[in-house]
Image (cartoon, rainbow, N blue to C red):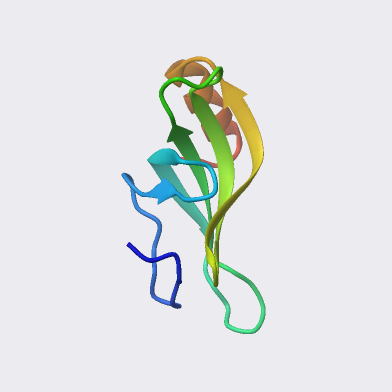
Length: 91
């Protein structure tokens, strides 16, 4: 898998966010890419076993160098993560 994104790349459940090592378990696209203006972005729940907070609810952005996660809410359980995800627009 390459970290270089094209305008056609989409984030999918099962993708690993390279800069975090976490796997996407839920995603809702909130914005489309507008060439020369903005990047596509999603609200996500990501998971990584063995972390103090195994679930993270992030905004993930499709930048030219790859998917980038930011603005995290960190959760102990999937139930907490789903609540945060819903509050942030996840469906």
